[in-house]
Image (cartoon, rainbow, N blue to C red; front, side, top):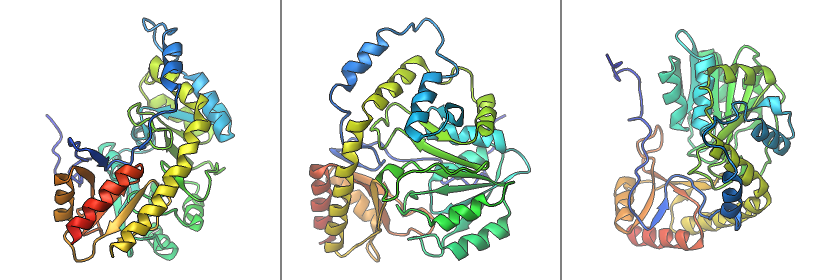
Length: 349
């Protein structure tokens, strides 16, 4: 018999509409195509694969390449099919009945959803001000919850801000507390990614955003070798297929070209913020490739539907805790951003 969904406390599951529109700015994908030559190179390497054989179960070449990128050892890298499977593997390894995870809303919905499905009790805390997480507020919530696992997202989704380093330091100070630090958007932040040398910290990243490979579904984490060894025990065998491993290695070959797009996205983000402010709406400061917008007294649901009618899709966050009348827009290319601004300006009139 299927387990009843009542009591799971899900936000209707994970739901981001996939609609047939001309401008899609709702899922924080890269607006840019993969670098020139990528598909040709991918064809070269995949044509040499023996697909009648199972893939390298240890995905050793992928680990080595990622480790070199992150300036860590290969045994400190764990990878899976998207960062969601990384999170699921963590929850399977460290969760279960009688264990508790703390999630601070508003944040990425899959943290609490996956944790609950893996048997963890999820203790939800709520920001007093959705714009930023206050250190004193976090300290109080952490002491009150006393969780086994803490989920932190920096830059946070959907608010876009980097967390105060003191918050991360406090969370990692308790050695019996697993800290999952989701850094999916760190490539667009003012502060570069750094490895945190603590046994209880698991830093999750993805190829969906900065590498423009949302369609590939590849994520990874950097953690201590002991943690990685445990995660390798719970993940399914041969979980990374041969084509995916080849595609990841190709993407890393083209990393310098991919990184060139980060500056363009950041530039477009700052321009978009100024244009939103000119429309008299509040655009949250962002270190990610998206912007959260507070429309105040205006009805964000009506605006969202109005944008769809103009063939522009953004993320409606109005149902998220503390985000009444908020929409989140992915930073697109110059043409997409202009379409969004023009459509929004017309609706706000």
